[in-house]
Image (cartoon, rainbow, N blue to C red; front, side):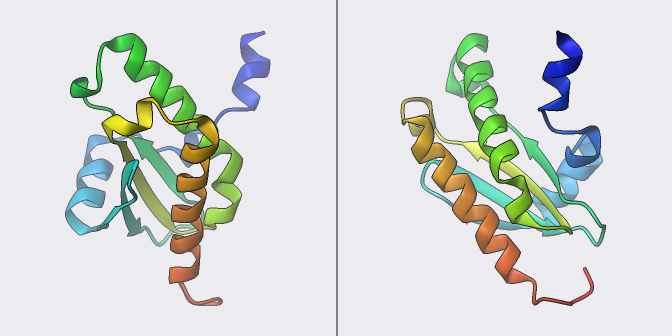
Length: 126
């Protein structure tokens, strides 16, 4: 059962994994206030986009933080194709994200991904 669940998640190549990668996005990326989230985006110059999530302890206990991460991962999984290649993205939820309906959280992620995808002119080298 565990293997079938993994097939629907984000592949390792689509995730930010190293602390150094997170630091680069924070230092060199552009910060965007999305209401429910704070998004950081940096062009990575690679064929794939990578996404990372950071949920601070101020958001609540482990159960609340993990629930929020699961909801965010699902929104990212559904709309990752709309982002296109060449981005490193970090999403940080705000406290309001804990209580909003999933559809609203999903819409916020989708709008951010579409804005990033439109920021690179078609055919430009990333």
